[in-house]
Length: 162
Image (tube, rainbow, N blue to C red; front, side):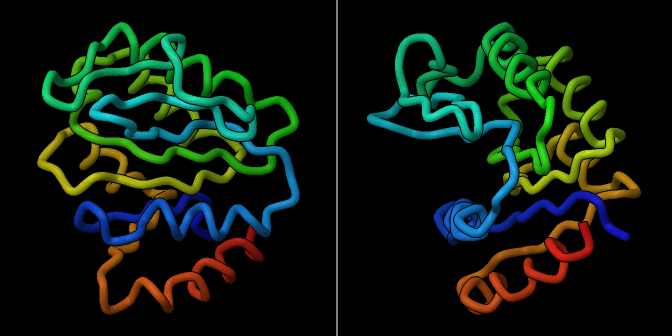
């Protein structure tokens, strides 16, 4: 049984939209995070917390890359709050986390844990992303313009296996 499912594909193809549509039918408590881009900045919002982008959850400016300390602080906090969660969200993981060692460790602890994960892996050449994709409990689905409309149905069996 695949415990964790990650979507990958080109930017803007609909990976996060697929996850949000899937989560509309999720009834349990969510943990994890969403990254949100707004006016050239990226924010990390805790899943299920009803947060809005602000100075407290600011990660980085798009043209400047990521600050490992911000990823470590915000990402680790989001992944530590898992009490009673039926699903963890990791939308999305990318190469900006390359130096965020504590955050990476938190991601791998979650992969070894008992809570299923639904996430997004950016298409990038990154050891961190390759290690996630190669994890024995991870399945990676590639989203394209040709298959994105049918992938919602492919997520249902994974949901029922959990």
